[in-house]
Amino acid sequence: MTIIEFQHLLAWCLGINYAILIVWFAVFVFAHEALYGLHRRWFNLSVETFDAVNYAGMAIYKIGVMLFFLVPWLALLLMGK
Image 1: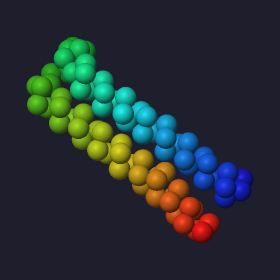
Image 2: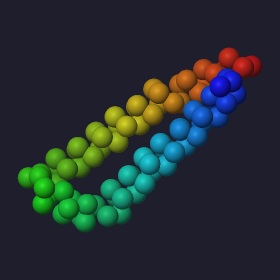
Image 3: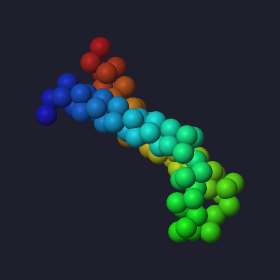
Image 4: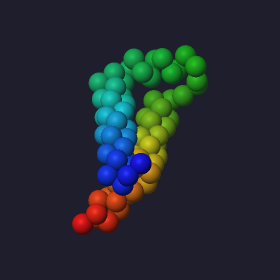
């Protein structure tokens, strides 16, 4: 695999992961009550705890995407110039 192919792979991974993050956020915002009702059946969570867990999950996921896909992609991009 060449560096250019690896750059393309990282760019696709970055795009797919950000799409997942956007979908997660959209479902959280626009279907909050349904999502909370579904999880309330499984776990004894207050609305505040549910919101905090989802917000923290999105933050951790976003940091992971940046760490594992965005930073290496930018490094390879800068290396090629």
